[in-house]
Amino acid sequence: MSSEVKVDKISPSSGTALTIGDSGDTITIPSGATIANSGTATGFGGDNTPAWHARKSGSQNMNSGAETVITFDTEIVDTDSAYNTSNGKFTVPSGEGGKYFVYAQLQRNNYTGGRFITKINVGGSQLLSAEMRNSDSGGTIFDTVGVSGILDLSAGNEVTCSLFQNAADDSGVNGDSSGSKSFFMGFKLIGV
Image (tube, rainbow, N blue to C red; front, side, top):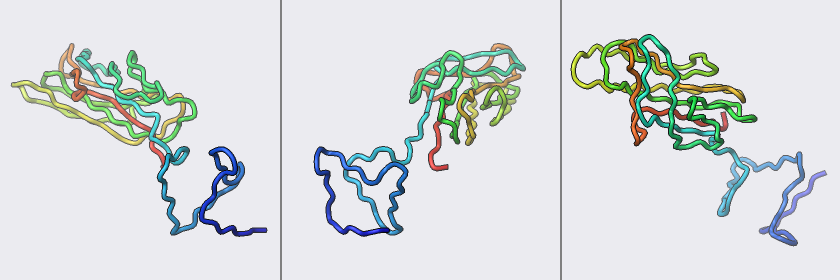
């Protein structure tokens, strides 16, 4: 049995809270209707969290032919305290599995030749990578390589950024205090 009530305003009879429906009910807004909100809306959609953004404040070197996880040591954003500056890992929090946009950028710290591969790994396995090779033999070399993609992650997955280079021992990535050279970030997508 259904019925229709037509009124211009509904207000709570006491206090300041009004409840529409009960747990398990579906409230339908028909096609063509508009919800106009002049107050604060909570519990709708999402806010693209967990999210993190960490930067490299100085250089990190490695031996030629090595792949090394980069530790971005300064957090800019870490909504769920899920990024670890000591080991470079973002760990997906409990209940927060889903699709994430992830991006990493690494800058070569002034050396020539060889391969320079920026990688994004999950559980130690490479899922995304971008590479550049430099044969310039003169001048200063600060090439930058970025890689991004959408990853399907589960709670507990560990996401890292690593670098492979085979140009020279004791070479690697450059960082700075502004965070514009080498950084690692990501956030959970909503509605996908």
